Image (cartoon, rainbow, N blue to C red; front, side, top):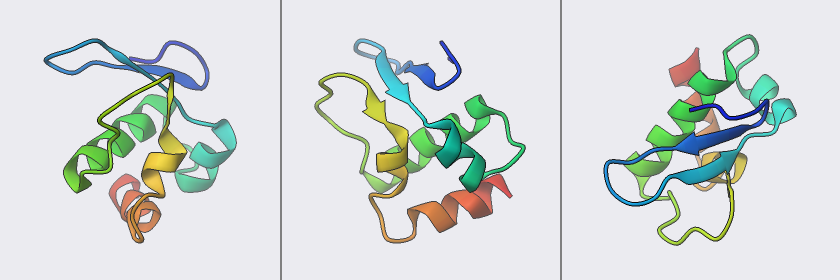
Length: 82
């Protein structure tokens, strides 16, 4: 769920919601023209699939960091968001 221009609330089936942020400049460079929520959702999905989503969260999760945690993360996201 988008809560602001660069902020999101990630809702999982269990546990408390997680706050996340995605810098506009990173989103535009990654997927120009794509809606912020679509880009954020895909980054969360990739983070969960690859096991890089943080298990302990102290404050907002930086989605650009999650995207860059694997060697091919950014390229994979560009492909998915095509």
